[in-house]
Length: 330
Image 1 (tube, rainbow, N blue to C red):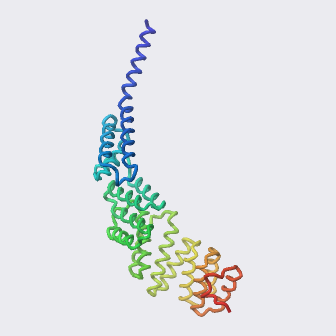
Image 2 (cartoon, rainbow, N blue to C red; image 1 turned 135 degrees about the horizontal axis):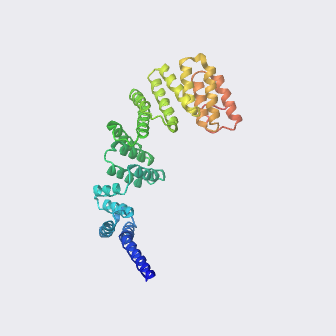
């Protein structure tokens, strides 16, 4: 008799366990049905998804969540179903409840942008704004990068300018620093030298101190030095360019531009300049642009012997194409 009661009790416990698991199991099943319906609706393209099919998927996913509110897959799917229907605020609420963050969407957008899927990247970045409306400058900056990558630099510049003008709602200090550095460099390229100098000082001021960003900080100092040089401030330019070289000694262009500025500041230090150029040429020995830049500089400044010597060295290394203008045949 005692054995029989044990069997009855065990059966009761098993039944109770099944009942306790039933909501989660049912939710999982309904969620899978809803996600399958949503996938089918989006089979061609998200923008052409059938309204009826998406609404059907929404109903399945809501039923799944009614049985188990912790069903993350169903909640994420519901977010997609809602955004496909233009109900973006409701979608953002579901994504937040599922534990999604702006950083998750930024990572997805970055992946799409690097893969050349620019339209998809823009959609991910727009969702960043839905999830975290405060991240205004971040979204604009990311949209700038996407337009630039797709070949629409002018439009990208408009987004960047707006991001900088607002200068609030940054994902992290790194993003703010990168945006200010890019803005300063773009102003330099537009020949707006005083504005470029101001923007680059700002970039340097907000540098977050992360070691992996040191090459970018070096580049900020390089553009700063160039903008100062173009305004006639050779002393300031020398200091900025020297800092650029110190931060990233492997950048040949920083060394070339430091050497040029040093020569213009004091032509008597031509031997030091020559050493800087030599290091730059050895850093990228196969880059014809560096050879052309150095040889042209020496010729334009009356240093024919140094230019001819480099032309001879270039010919010995087999560099002919691309140097015809600065190394004419005798």
